[in-house]
Image (cartoon, rainbow, N blue to C red; front, side, top):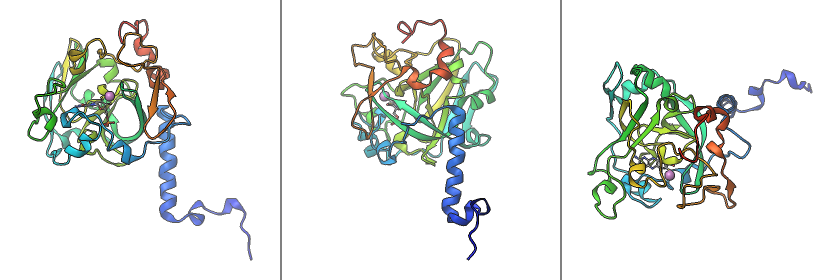
Amino acid sequence: MVIKKAPDIASSAITPEHLYVGRRRFLKSVAAMAAVGAVDAGDTPTPVAAATTYNNFYEFGIDKSDPAGHAGSFKAHPWSVAVEGRCAKPGVYTLEDILKPHPREERIYRLRCVEGWSMVIPWNGFPLAALLKRFEPAGDAKYVEFTTVLRPQEMIGQRRRLPHVLDWPYVEGLRMDEAMHPLTLMATGMYGRDLPNQNGAPLRLVVPWKYGFKSIKSIVKIRFTDKQPATSWSREVPEYYAFFSNVNPGRTDSQYRDQSTERRIGEFFMRKTTLFNGYGDQVASLYAGMDLRKNF
Ligand SMILES: Nc1nc2c(c(=O)[nH]1)N[C@H]1C(S)=C(S)[C@@H](COP(=O)(O)O)O[C@H]1N2
Ligand SMILES: [Mo]
């Protein structure tokens, strides 16, 4: 009997092929995660069953189970996105036009809702910056405004007049430097598959250092502007939801809810919430010299 020394044994010889390929993919994604600095030891991805059944998507109702329950017949295909405002390449782009040049990456990001819960999700998508650059923003484009689809026939929450939730369509916005930041993701999938309708199919933002409501779902319009956009939640309740809405455990503006702790979906104990949701090393410089209490 010949006993091979460890270095002679290819890992493919001791690991069945499919697990071996899985392991290589895993190691690749670990490297990618390290590159964007988005991982710490406590970041176990939220079970997919929880991330797809505990949602905020008020166009489908206000309960956490409503989006999964009511988004089944929403038609995310065909889809197009109108690009407007201060840029050299405005127009209506099909989803295929939008996606084609962009390799689909995986990014494991924490996302924290202002309501006090958080998730860790392996998103698939590409940097928003790469997409925006294709439209050649003008020098005076200081902000980007995003709009969700208005489709009352498919979105039960847009049909109901009472209780009043928001004025539809849902609008969000970012300052240009935030939109161009390498962490800002245009997501098209999660857990290696296309986005489920309830998570914002076919195209949504993920802005991990900001409260979840900035991560607008099912985007149909991108507009470059020189003025700070009026966003849905800040119009509705300006005392609680401001334009920046960076995750901040030290918020004192909000009588709405204490922001110092959060519960990771699926966990029992509360965790401490961290400034910029833990992404401060990468994004704090965007806000140098700004009073984060005033500009909450
Ligand atoms: N169009 C639209 N986008 C939205 C929302 C919404 O109600 N409508 N809810 C936001 C909020 S409050 C959160 S916390 C996240 C939730 O994303 P998830 O359901 O994929 O976890 O989506 C955000 N994007
Ligand atoms: Mo949220």
